[in-house]
Image 1: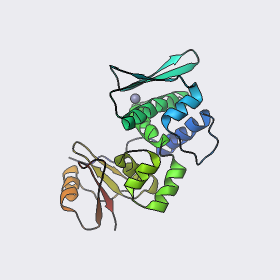
Image 2: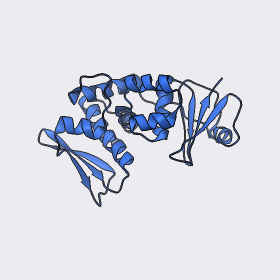
Image 3: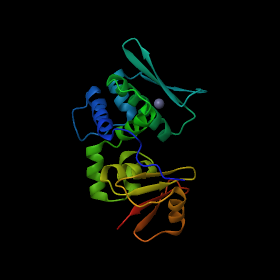
Image 4: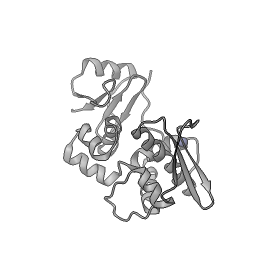
Length: 211
Ligand SMILES: [Zn+2]
């Protein structure tokens, strides 16, 4: 299977929409990093998030008067809830920017992940720590997979995240080969590649080009 590169979205626009989201929540400090729940409550009030039991979706957002109400399933873990709320907030900022199109879901996944790993502060911390996904995850309240992918995005360092069902690559173009080849490298290692096990998910491996 061929590896698919990038996410087919306009990254510069996505990063701009993340900043728009902060601005619309009234956050002026460019180095501040807030949880999606904080961004939502700052903007729409303390009652704007409902945690719903037996919810048929992971999360949703609906218009109520001039505000919005975000609903999220109580069956999700805290980190999943965060990501799903963030994804729904991304839908709002995309709508406000008039962004539609076949890549809307990919766009909202990217923006949703980036709210909590905002470009400037995450880049600064990634420069300080290097590829220390555990510490980045602790600092930004994410999973280590989330931190690893974001590390590849902001540093452009070639990185592959190998999970049981998916292989995702980030960073500069690099000779990864096919999906099967990346999976083999994750098992056996390869010259010019460092392998990082993710302590919060032993089924996943991050590969980082060193050459
Ligand atoms: Zn969506």
